Image (tube, rainbow, N blue to C red; front, side, top):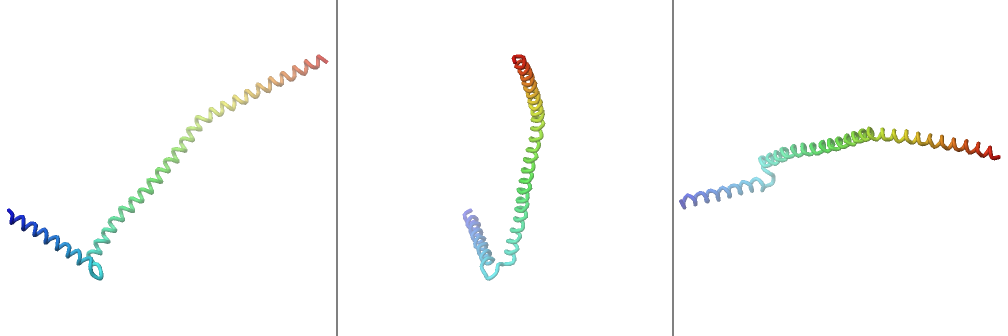
Amino acid sequence: MGGAMKRVSTNYASLCIAWRCMAMELLIGEHLHSRLVLLIWMLFIFNVIPLLAFVAYLFLSGIIIVGCALFAELLTMLFGLAVLMPVLLFCSISAICVSAFIIAVSTFYSTSSSQHFAKLE
């Protein structure tokens, strides 16, 4: 059992050394190895596409959220006006009625008081 374990650890160590040698061979030198360049470009392309899609999603969802908020404001204003307009109409009609009553009463008192003063003279 000890010999098998020793062989596994030796194989693992030799794999690590081989991997490091291969990595150094790819990275050290005047130019990068074409396979490493291909790997880097593929990683870049395959990660940029979802990133651009995510940025587009954020932009479009922001537009949709702002559009929905503006639409909600419009609906609120319209429904608010639907409640406010009858109130304003009632208040305006009340103001006209009260003004007409005050004018009628003041006219009545001015004519009756002028007739009263005319009789006194």
